[in-house]
Amino acid sequence: MYAIEIENLAKSYGNSKAVDDLSLNVHQGDVFGFLGPNGAGKTTTILSMLGLVIPDSGTVKILGYDIFRDPIKVKDRIGFLPENATVYGELTAWKNLEFFANFYRMSNAEKEKRIGELLKLVGLWDARYRKAKTFSKGMKQRLLLAQALINEPDVLILDEPTSGLDPEGAYLVKSIVREERRKGKTVFFSSHILSEVEELSDRVGIIVGGKLRAVGTLEEIKREFMELEGYEIKVETKQPIPELDLDGIIRMERISNNRAIIFATDDIREAVSEYLAGRGITIVSLEIEEPSLEDVFLKTIYRRGEK
Ligand SMILES: Nc1ncnc2c1ncn2[C@@H]1O[C@H](COP(=O)(O)OP(=O)(O)OP(=O)(O)O)[C@@H](O)[C@H]1O
Image 1 (tube, rainbow, N blue to C red):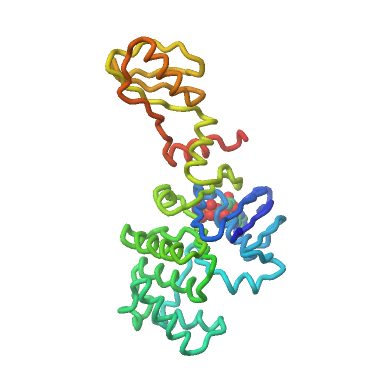
Image 2: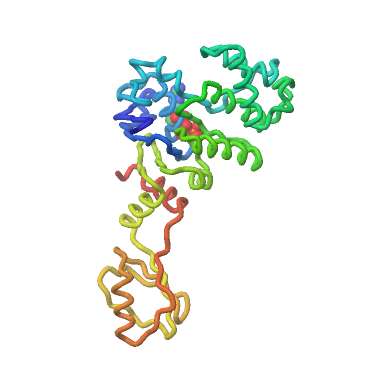
């Protein structure tokens, strides 16, 4: 079952398409990383899928409920951390959370228990009676994350959750995402930081210029990229490498006498292996060089407008 189903979502500002016919599904229990450069349309997608911006067209279902027909049912079961959200500086950490807990049907005892658990989860228990205006950026972000978790949401939507945080702050946010995933919750988070998308996500979507350019597991995205861009095969042999006269080879780059990179239209490792063996050459290693997410991402941005 899908936790999030987005179909043909579109939103323009004037003549510019911020989100352009975007469709994607997020499986329940997955962490989905929504990757895109600045201005790609990540925030507009998130706000549109929550009904906080009215899209021009498209449908969004969260946990099977249509966000526009059943907004209350959806909002009961999701948590949202907006980009550049702010805390109530004059209130303590505890009071900040209490304010949001009051939006949900919880008894006082439930509220107290939940707030206590969350403050411990995000590492703010010792600071619970301090005014939020005295907090560091990282502490504020963790308080906001606790706020998004107040109703024990099944789907957590985070817009650039680690933006502006130092490595320790980012680490804490990431460990909370992992903890939610461990509990079987679904997390949809946007980011322009490749390493964190790579680290956290079960599946990834790459948005550029409002369009979803790639979606899938990292392996699927990389495979698709190689099919489109070609394969890089690293070969090392005992004896010097001869010229290779094989179908599918675009070019060969020699690194040394017995090491080279073969650029090919396909995975031609078997053909290379047979070719070399037939000439009495011993192969030390023959490997596909996997593209990094950075390769995929930069090429995807570069290709924008060509599709
Ligand atoms: N309220 C608005 N009015 C006009 N244009 C807007 C508005 N909101 C967003 N845009 C434009 O829509 C495009 C997508 O913006 P959006 O904020 O969704 O991108 P983003 O991927 O979240 O970027 P960032 O990472 O910089 O926040 C941009 O060109 C932006 O200038």
